[in-house]
Length: 371
Image (cartoon, rainbow, N blue to C red; front, side):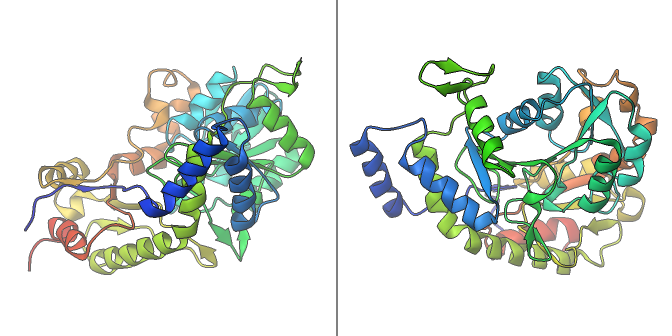
């Protein structure tokens, strides 16, 4: 079989013939950044598509996390998960705050609400959970704890574009939610991100913070940063929004094929869809039990890689094991047994709308073996 590389992700690219007129419009307008026409149109379109009242676009997915903490004036300690991309914790560090890691749920990979309360101290002011792989967190229990102790809740929803629970967007949970529109995501603006909030006043504050803190031509009200999305990427995103439902449907078909083929393979566990949740199929993680499967996670990972199948050990290593954070008391591996087990056993298989049937079969052949 063809040994051409199969990547874990592939960007959602709009048809070139659709994109060219948008580029021409930008060229003719001579307005290429700073709240231009396409920027405004994309914010409106995303607000409607996602079912959120207020959304602010950013140049990437990390800066919304940093800005959310700043906008909510979070201080002291922030309870978060070690099982995420490192940007989640970096955003806490960049605000001069202390991350406090707690363990995760073994089924979803999300922060475990049962572990949060014990981690709260007088210095705790916020919780930053992650909707891992697009699986919704237990938002009701997290919010109950936040209300009990007067904490802010910021959801890292980088994987959760378009995800709903009982028909309602999970992006409306907590005080804010952040999104990533990186090229590896289900929906992309090449690089980009967004911050969802609940009031016009807060959106105005966010928009000021992402533009150096300017509140007018000659007035700066806060030490903001430059994190604006330009017109080219906004146009790219506006076009991609027209095709994202088709891409999600294609990803779902890939997920169904993977699950059907792997469900009876000893030592391989797949995450199942959650009832009443509209998933976006951002990733397809499997977890390898070496004793049952007869091969370690890393052995399988490198076997796939040797055959040009580029999976990803996502998330490995844990954030808490990286040098900037491993000295924290909460980073002790003994406190994070589930997160460590997931990190040591996970492989995200290739999952994107462009996967061909033969490519899916090739991936599965390497895992299941030939008949």
